[in-house]
Length: 389
Ligand SMILES: *Cc1c(COP(=O)(O)O)cnc(C)c1O
Image (cartoon, rainbow, N blue to C red; front, side, top):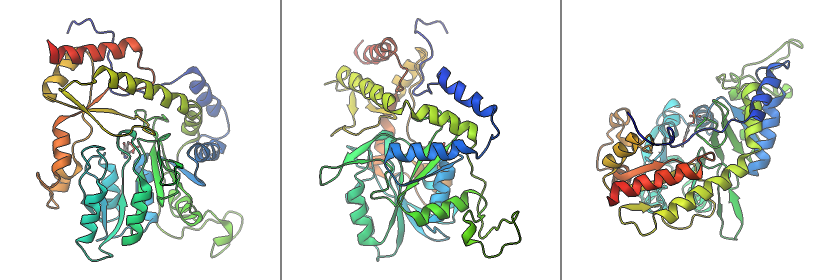
């Protein structure tokens, strides 16, 4: 199709620089391809960036969720709550462990789990019915985890923060303190992803963060088949070659090549956020007062802007129109409870009205640090042209 758009503009894209390539090739020339010195270096740099005590690098964000659920002891029949407006993996990790996923609806202003509805859900059953909750910092907007912690303590729940969208995001707590997403201050565990579309690209990659030494030690073992990583805790010792598998685990290791790329990417994470905020502000200004577009309302301080989500009238028409202009806006997300897999457990249309009406109109506009001013202007002008001409 002939058109005059600059080039294909996706909703998100990685930013690979020469220095990233150098970092990877250096590792290729070293003695370690997997699980060498770069893993530890990445874990320490990431923990410092987020402001948590411990970080464990794993093969992807889904593996991070799986190990987090395992470490918190999810087992057959355990009920765990999450939001329908997320990637399926946030819910699937519960199923991997045999648990049951219970969805709770979003707040239509923030698109995050509605804490009032969550309380209603918890109060409707005897204490102990639910084991944990997985809030998702959707689009990069931080959940108020202090609020979640209060509720979780009242009902005896653990918290896994799905921070895949929000490295560099934060919320302000009741004492006015900045609380970084994934810093382990309120959640038991947090998870991140380094898929190319996320803030920090490693090809594939994930991280679990926590302030709990016990959880940290346990997850280190689970990452490598359940083999005890602490020599002092081995039950037997047959010699220097001896390794001991004490429980069932997986091979969820990251490679040193990926860690080298991620370290290099991490050094530009902060400037990436600055750029994302700039892009968000430009959209915000461009669509000020436009009745055809609704935007996530409320404070935006601390938003990491993984996505720039709008709710658009005639979204189907708009998507089609933008595609013809080589602009690939995307829908995030199809509510997870409506996936055929989850429908088999009885979830159906109408169960989560806020999530479903959000799904009917949501659209993620191009948002990534290398989106140029010219490209963004092109996107904005095309959206205006669709509605106004
Ligand atoms: C990307 C993502 C995941 C999964 O991460 P992978 O690295 O792709 O396995 C989980 N949760 C959310 C919210 C995500 O965006």
